[in-house]
Length: 305
Image (tube, rainbow, N blue to C red):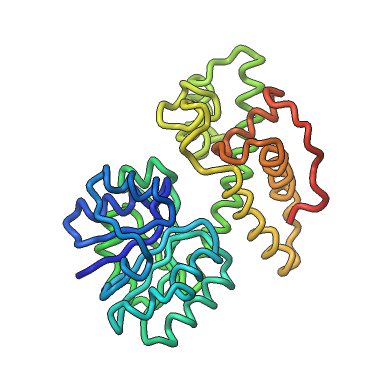
């Protein structure tokens, strides 16, 4: 089985590396020369074009920031047309449900198959191969893909038809964003009250305030060694990417008549971080707005969708 991989960023590189380490014949590609160089340093073979990476691939996997990038990589570049005639395309990016459905239709029209399979677990989960996959598409296609996904994650859920994986991921990130904002507020207040971060985690972690954001992503450095806060908010889930995901959620909420006021407020705060030059930091840097570490100078944007 030949696997082509497009997208070697903070998530894509460790995911591809785990698949390669599991013994699969995999070649990667990224538009960034630096990303390709990092992949090579990890022992991952790379090529210099999406067409080259997709040539004769039985499975083509994409892990990219936006739906436009997925469409460009698969369709606009011509990569899809050079894969094996019945190739399975797996997109693990986080994009709009409608975009996933549209791309799936274009893939299916060529005789290839498609799964939308976004992930949860962050860069730590990508590195440790403990990701959760939320998959939309035909069950038979998921059964074929399952061994590959198991090389990168520990939990695989069939969410439903094409696009359902993206819908499930959107819902997850809505809750994550709200959890992180409340965790940031509690963490900042705990510092002012003189309660040590690890004490907060120990108590809330076995109480009703428990959450993944608390235990795995605590926003005060030193409390959780693997959390981005312990490396000055670098190398995690960027503010701009979480803001993009919340935009998808807000659009969906508006379309279905759902009041998503809490998510709109977190989105507004992420805009403040991005507009003041902090869009590349991990989104747990929201605590810097809560505790006043960052004084914003750019005005808040009008509207948040």
